[in-house]
Image (cartoon, rainbow, N blue to C red; front, side):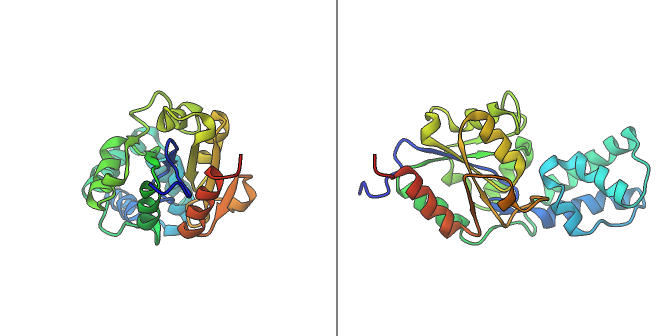
Length: 229
C-alpha cells in the first residue's frame, strides 16, 4: 500500500443518523403513523430533526408537547411500540446516505482504516439500515445503544467502538453534542458534520473539526493522522 495518507492501525467511529444517513424522513413518517393511531395531528419534519439524537421516546414526548397534549407515561410507551414496529419495517423507504458518504468510506478503507458504527439506535433498527443501503461491507463493527456497556454520551460507547486503537489513533465522527461529549469523555478527537440533526449549530460546539461535507472531512482525516512527527 502507498504509505501516503496511510490510515493503517487507525479506527474511525461514525455516528449513523444525521452523520452517514439522512434518516429523518422515515423517522418522521413513523412518528406520525404512531401519532395518527391516537388521532393526534402530524408533527413537522424540522421538529423531528432537532430531536432525533435523543431517541424515539423523546420524539414522541416532543411531539406531544408541541401539540399541547398531555404526556402520559403509559400512553407514550404504547405509542413507542407502534412507532418502533412501523419504523423497523419502513426504515429505508426514504432514508439515504448523505452525498459523498459512500465515497468517503471507500477511500478511508482503501487507506487502511478500520471503520465502525457508533450509534444510539438499538441494533434491531440499525442493522436493517446498513444492510438495505449496502453500507455493511464498509464496517468492521457495529456498536449500538443496546450492545455496549453504556451509550453516548458515556465514554464507554466510543471507547468500545474504537477498540483496540490507542486514543491518538482513534476518531469519532458525528453530527451532535452527544457525539462530541462522548468523544471528549473518552479523550478522543471528534469531527462533526454540519448537515445533521444538531439543535445548535455544530460550529459552536467546540469540536476538533467541523465540515460541510464528506470531501472536506476525508481530507481532514488524512491530515490528522499523517502530520509530520
